Length: 280
Image (cartoon, rainbow, N blue to C red):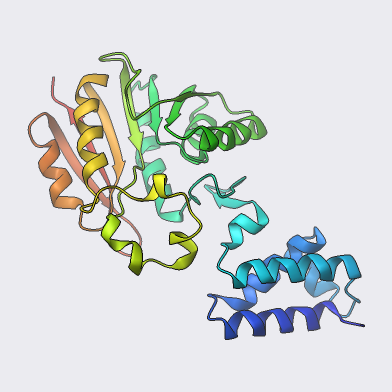
């Protein structure tokens, strides 16, 4: 069957649109580009070229996976974060653009202070730790409770030749008291009760250990802040991504031992990052 690249894009876009997949045309372009091993500009420069049989087979498989709810990033095995393409698969949470605010807050702090001992807790794909290491040219420590996630993070660190050292840990268990200048974390914060209301791409495909806390979504914050009080040196900084409705409860958790508490909002105006300094 003779099918041009342009026609394949139109058919794929129509299928995705009927299935209520977001941004159907862009998704079709990304999947076809991946199937052909080309960038998206190639699709338009060669719109009237015949799609090869192998290209059609791969494209059809990717469309079928996306129609079943599999996130595009898990199909292409890539997600851009802070201008770099990170490898991702079902072992790790897909890095979100909003988390770049957390990295920006960390970079701003590092530029103003001599933070040398830096730990990224719950590193997942390693996107935060690798980005900090590359942007600051400093060694960074990263941890995760998930061994499969650490394998992905190590792969990304190796790809970018980033000076990141990884350890398997439940939060801060192996960290020496008073050893950290900067602790950064994007912890699990989705309330378990919210699972039924989530997009199926997230609920059914992304690792639950990286998504869900208890029914309130606050349990990991409480454990992290309690451990951070011992692991961070007096005057050291804690930076955390905030979940929906977490602002006031997390601020209250910090009130006894932490000062200089500030909040950064994302582009939509939601409180996204909370920072605090351990009282001396």
